[in-house]
Length: 470
Ligand SMILES: Nc1nc2c(ncn2[C@@H]2O[C@H](COP(=O)(O)OP(=O)(O)OP(=O)(O)O)[C@@H](O)[C@H]2O)c(=O)[nH]1
Ligand SMILES: [Mg+2]
Image (cartoon, rainbow, N blue to C red; front, side, top):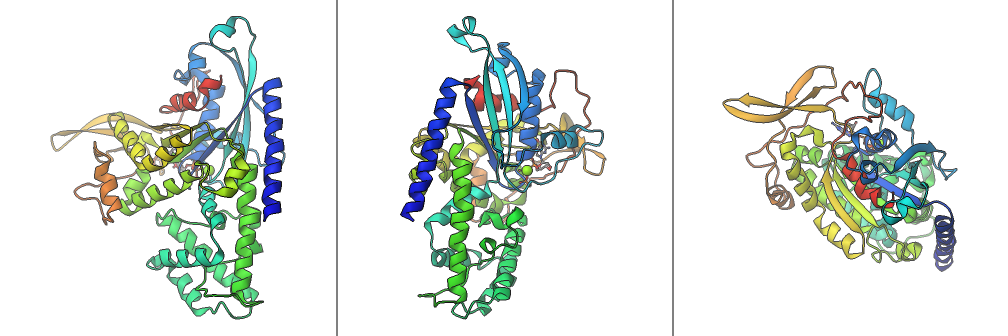
């Protein structure tokens, strides 16, 4: 235990010295982490961000662009040979091709390097030629950050907490039935362990689809090439006291520990610890549409996710980070093109309120934070429609079946407490309000040369995240 954490911090130490040397001597590198829970809009965000940084006609909010200091931007081979490349070209052609469609769900970490040749701002700009700044964008699932909480918990504690939390959930019935029938003190039997893990994983999948966000261990949902391996073949059990040798209990506990050391820790060491700037994407509109329970659940998951950005919360992580911290964190409500712009400030206020506890903690730790609402790819146009004598600010777009529709999603409250209060107090549904949600397809685009795909406030997001380094 001691030896492994020592080794971790040594590796981190050597790496960060290397980073610093190459930064000062050569070219600065910004590592931008993009995360969010499943379907929050990470892939669309990165694709549109890259496209709009390559063709900057729609990026007036990026100061270096406005000041004409960006000479060129180009894609480069990424620095990490073992991380899959973010499949930019395929995602972009899905979004902007002749039959525009949303990209497929992604299942693992991926990375892309974009390089800028830009003249520095201020006094130096006349004296120095353009310099190169690299932007490494890393896409990773927010669920993986939730796993940080497992590091502090033994198998026994984790089992007890998990079983208690899921006890009343319909999605968990089949798993709980099987778990209650199993005797953890019995001799370990692989088919039994596999059956338990399979039921547990299918519970996690169903829970996520039902809008629960506390679906850890995160890798059960996105197993990738670990599918079927022992580190993913465990489940919580009603364990009591000592684990007899060769028992199911002992083997489950061993695998749980292996998950922590071989799945959770490498992610934090190889990816998380190297991030300088972070954007956390949140599908707040989707949660509001699902109802108060989903909103409250999402608020809690956000707070848990963001506790990873608060150094000191976890001894292992603080040691790994060696004082390095994420410098800026942006909380962005995605898919704002579902709302008429008159409602965008309200969405931002909801976003700010949703992440308030977490934001306070992160700012306490020295990171600069901001919240905004954005649409990485604008799929709608705005129009005012009259309904029963009232004017409704609507958005219009193409539905997934190809039909056109105008849509009024409901009126978000001015005061976010009107949503978050009932959610926190366990309300079953929104009183006197109904928030619709309509799945639009990406619009057919004809882009002028020099223009990236249409968006809402992606330039403001880029300015906050990297503008100061260009
Ligand atoms: N209208 C609109 N819809 C969006 C936008 N961004 C994302 N979406 C919708 O949200 C869905 C999920 O977006 P992705 O970018 O694939 O989300 P993700 O976070 O990468 O999802 P996973 O890879 O499954 O975790 C898309 O299929 C779209 O339906 C946007 O800017 N506007
Ligand atoms: Mg994705």
